[in-house]
Image (tube, rainbow, N blue to C red; front, side, top):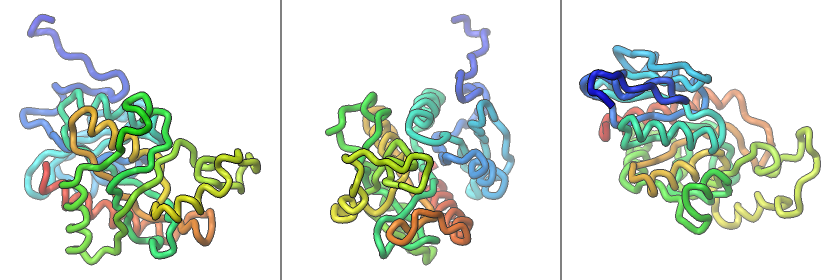
Length: 261
């Protein structure tokens, strides 16, 4: 390719390395919800630049209070979408990814409004199996994970540290019966109780694939989720706790991003 030919944008992200400035970011805060990525960019970063809002995969470039560049990006819902976004983020130079999500607790002591920090994932995800075999460990970066725990402690934010169940479906895969499909496969009936006995702390839909990608691709990955449902009591999200839980997860992620960006 001639040197004067501009580098093409990545097909899904909608931007390329040439859009990231003279000091490109190496850290991305990754949210499933495009609205959360926008909120982080607008309220936690300065000199924010919209990189793309292609396909609802909103991505922004901005600066932390310490002056370091960082990206706030959207993964979309579920592991297949995340796998595309993360692959392209790594290609534009991202080397650290902190996922900020929401989750449902499956342990009595992990309450709505708190945060769940994943040290590893029980990974029941088809996309992850295309990255590495099922027996390959889906483990978070230990340094990022410890930093998330320490930041939550400093801020006085209630947190749980443990193994996350990452699954592909919100309804059947998380043993929800109050949906359009009242029938659960026999392999899924009782799965949540089994996971409780295995000391799994929460359900979510992206971390396992992210962790496998981090280990295989060679970047640092971590995950913190605001707890918005207490599955030992009800299948429904606790909406009055959602904003608080998300804000706490964002606060912790921003504090850690300042250390690693």
